[in-house]
Image (cartoon, rainbow, N blue to C red; front, side, top):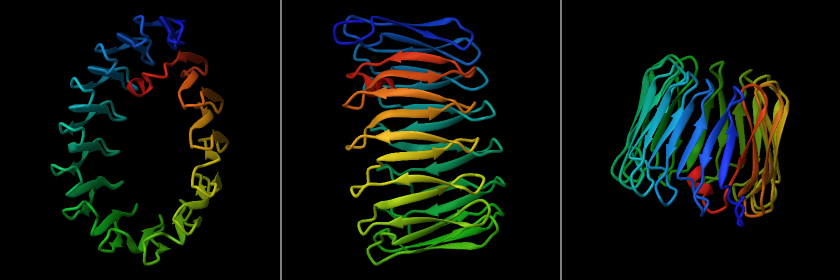
Length: 309
């Protein structure tokens, strides 16, 4: 390690037990960052002098690569991301980093289209329904939805009527059985009580403070149980309990300012990975899980965190 805690050379493990190499200059900014893909090959992150990725090649689950081409300033011009079927979705970016046209994938491998005006708010937002059709979100000039049509699993639509300022007056949302749950809204647009549907057709309850900050947010897990997010007065989660696929919980302890002190995240086998955090929110040591349930160790720099995450 360098004086400032920057790794000079960072050797990381791949799932097959080999090592990936992270060559570091004196200042601690990676010049070239080689990371491992699940099949034991490497993905390549070429770095300019300032530490901003020029071109970021990331791995897809099938071992192929997704490409994120970066301009000098670090804002993606064109962002190719992978879909579960190994194909690519395309996010074309404006000069300032605002998506001009955002093509995202639907579960059936087709694309959904989000057309963007120059300023960035969507003019028309086409999103996918489970049956491969599209739902339509018509947007006014300022980007506030006038009327938001969303899809229910049976292919019908749910309607979200919007006030002039963009705050829902009354928000009717769908449950999988085609019934509707009700979100009653005060004049100012802050929900007083938010009833949302769980997959089994029951409701989950989100009680709201006067200012619109959730006091306690009960969310549903796939089996219809609840996960709990306790909120302080200011709205920053003190302790965030989230559900894992096996119905256990993962714990995210939060500092006063909302920076995670210690972030325990779940691996697919139900074990935890550990991310110890400095006071400022920069990870001191980041233990991440590999597919085989082992850990890899990533030493992080305070000054290049944003460029490396």
